[in-house]
Length: 382
Image 1 (cartoon, helix red, strand yellow):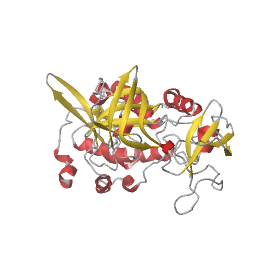
Image 2: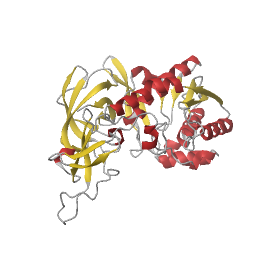
Image 3: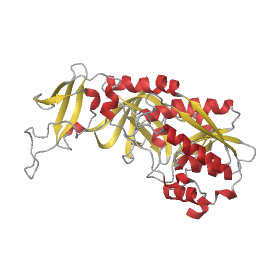
Image 4: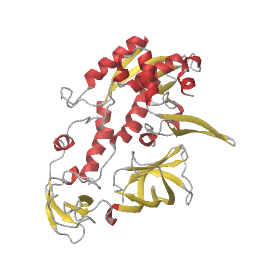
């Protein structure tokens, strides 16, 4: 099966069609462009510049990435477009990111970047270039599903479950999916690197990027302090309200956080072996600027089996059924957990998990699945 999936040069479904591929300079988007070229598409590479506040910063790799994209496009013999979406990014993604942190929540800007920039601004620009389709190096799949007298586009998990990125794409809609190709959806990462090496692409062993798209691997606290002033306040125990320390700002902390609290020596509960149990962030009081902590990873305050989500986005354009067993991811790296949707009204839904979930965090997204199909989801409020 692995060899069959890699023999994409036998597929010629793109003859006469133009596809614009969002290229980041990494191995994934480079191989996406290669595979589409092998399928007969006329491929145009497009490099998006979404952040320019600190272009000369040691953590900013934009220039290096653009050089890599240009090298790959030259190797493949395809045209390259460079477009600057930094103004749109600041207005549609970064401003929201700062508002969420000011409100005490922990947002996921990569999700908003996908829906607002990579599959909206990028899509509009590609269509203006005369493209028939757009494509990216995301690990996900799209299929057109026929049911009775209608059809819809579905977002599916990638074959490689360890790399599946459907979680970050749950806000895409029918119009966006209808124009989108994910050439890596049936491949494993090791195959992608092998394809790149065999094609002579120098990025075949390039390290994957990590961190938030515009922050990269820089120290997060230092970055945030440039835009939001620190407001120190008390750290209190949730059980009893005892003051056990001081935080530098609620925005630097998230539910379930253990490191960086600087209260490890404060006396409190002990585990069965008599060791001092670790402290974890359990709640924030934004109005009074208080950070509440508990001791022990499995403290009841860190476990919940119900959560309310808003900013609902359902890919098919209709609400899923209530009291029907689905699965959901309350964060990217967690396995799918059985759940039901108990209430749907006024852009709010209540997700009831079969088992308590740890550290459900306001601002993060819960993404709902039916088997391999991503149905959509929403943002945790309470």
